[in-house]
Image (cartoon, protein in one colour):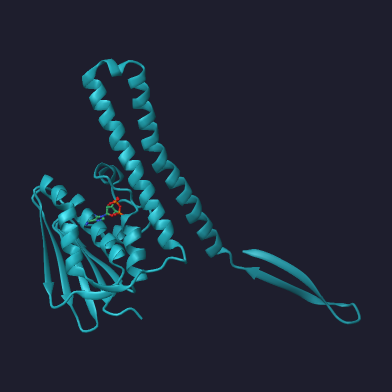
Length: 259
Ligand code: ADP
């Protein structure tokens, strides 16, 4: 608590009492802590690839360039780590844009089926690498009023995760189901699943169940934070169902018309 005290004095100047104001700063402290954690996380996430890029570049300069095999291997690492930096920076910019109050949706009629098909095309080589199949089904019409770019980002992030956290040979199913006033999007995988306590935290910025696994699959820990913000911006209701070792379903119920 912040505590303020002030004497209460009568017209004639006599002390009548004291006013004490207790200001509950729990919320303020919590926000301050979140901000500090965020800065620490960003710094750490940026530092790791930069350290690696610098180290391998130095080794090349110090002579590894003369050995073609090493040179190839090291430039490959440098490329991968710069790619990772770029993804991280783009995710951070995206998150800061959508967390900003000035963020606006460009509303139009959008077919979630059409967008899902585009996402499947974008991710087809990633899925093939892991011998995974992705299919899309539509029950009724999946047209809603929304921002096509942002909706694509939502589905892209969910399907990217579904592929990353599912072992080889698995399946991803994007289901679109028309309801009376809404369209439900489901992204269902046959992956590792998410425990109940972790389900409460995965939408936090930078939270990952397994940091190494996420890093290896190119994750930044920001994908689901972005999904949450974009779903909320569309007045969508987000839910996760999961069974460890069996798979997960991410569901978003989108209103057909924005209020
Ligand atoms: P990341 O870039 O690490 O994938 P996200 O914000 O997209 O970050 O997801 C946060 C964490 O939630 C992931 O690191 C992973 O542990 C977990 N997660 C997300 N999607 C799935 C999924 N489909 N199956 C299992 N775990 C998942």
